[in-house]
Length: 116
Image 1 (cartoon, rainbow, N blue to C red):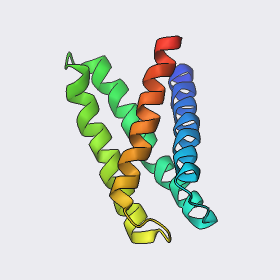
Image 2 (image 1 turned 120 degrees about the vertical axis):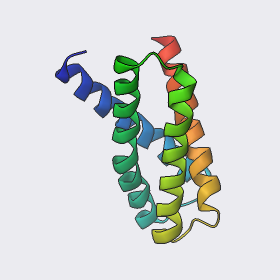
Image 3 (image 1 turned 180 degrees about the vertical axis):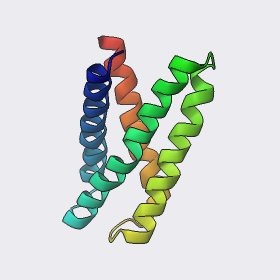
Image 4 (image 1 turned 45 degrees about the horizontal axis):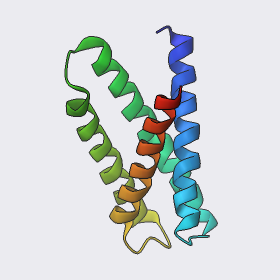
């Protein structure tokens, strides 16, 4: 994969992740604009790290996909949960929200990849 394709992949992944996690945010009945911005910023921090780390592991190792994915997803869940707990206004259970939002975006991504 060349650098242009990698950047496109990173951008698409981030856009889709934000869309799916923002949908979970809204479906959870949250409407605090600062918390929605916090969700956006948290994903701008975690998503590129997770996606790039996954691609690097896929390119340079022969590790099983799950050995790579599970720690990366846990990193995203814990990091975002900490961000929501520390800076959020309306996250009563920030780690549960982070888990649900990340699982929704992860499984939506798996489904999208299966379709294309």
